[in-house]
Amino acid sequence: MGSSDRLFNRQRTVHEILGGGLVGILLVTLAVWLVFEKSGYTLLSLVSSVLLLLLVILFLWAKSAELLNRPPPPLPDLCLSGEVVNEIAGFIHSRINALLSTSKDIALGKDTRMFFRVAAYLCVLSVVGGFTDFLTLGYTSLLVILTIPALYEKYEDDIDRYILKGCRELQHLCVKFDAEYLGRVRKWVFDFEKQKLS
Image 1: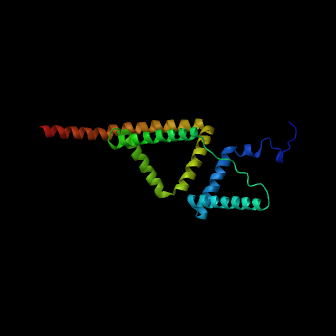
Image 2: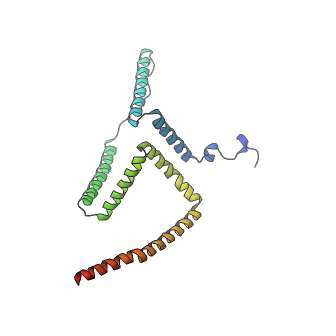
Image 3: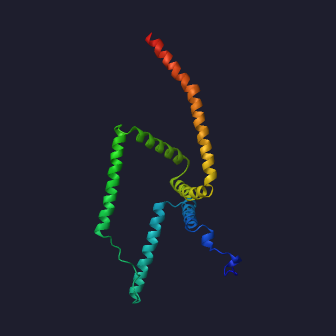
């Protein structure tokens, strides 16, 4: 292949070298996190400030265009059709009803397994929330979601081997714990019940 038109004779674009769209998402989320974390803005204050700035710019543009006999700012006609609104409402309605039905089943004790799952998730969220704020948690979660699958895909064989080895060792420890300690407890409870009945 001949010489390349690109700097350092590279064959791929910088976008491809940096990982394509994933790097862009990571950089944007890093920038958003830094803006919120370091500037002291909250999401609501930032959104309202940006909307206020946009509104002032459009208002001044429209007024100056009116005075100078120029066209007003090109704003699209934003309108939602009735079908789209009905689809969104139906989707939200079904999801909220499913959530309420599941919540009722949990509260009435009909789904014990779901109760323990929800309780575990809420405990984990409570502990994690005690260490960090929502914005940092969201950024860290996005970072993990975007990097872990790529790392797993790259080192899939090694990761699978170590996870299977760890699972076998954990299973061996559980069997040993069950045989040594839980077996003694069962025997002690059985002997205690036997003595109580005698």
